[in-house]
Length: 75
Image 1 (tube, rainbow, N blue to C red):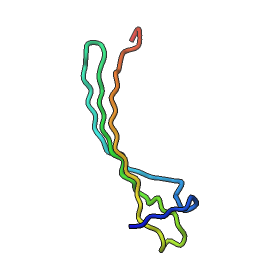
Image 2 (cartoon, rainbow, N blue to C red):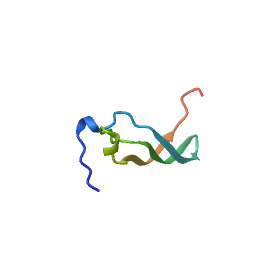
Image 3 (cartoon, rainbow, N blue to C red):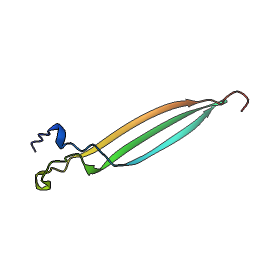
């Protein structure tokens, strides 16, 4: 598939469905948090006119994050 986009033919709005899971582990008073997620694009990024010239190009994303959570003083 040959994709040739012009700047004015790319959609400026993107809708996606986030899917993911996370886990939290206690380490003393603090906690360790891990998260993995996937973003599934719901609309095409191709905004060419006429619609018959549009290709089905969807955004997808994959991510991983980790955090250390700690209580604030006095909490």
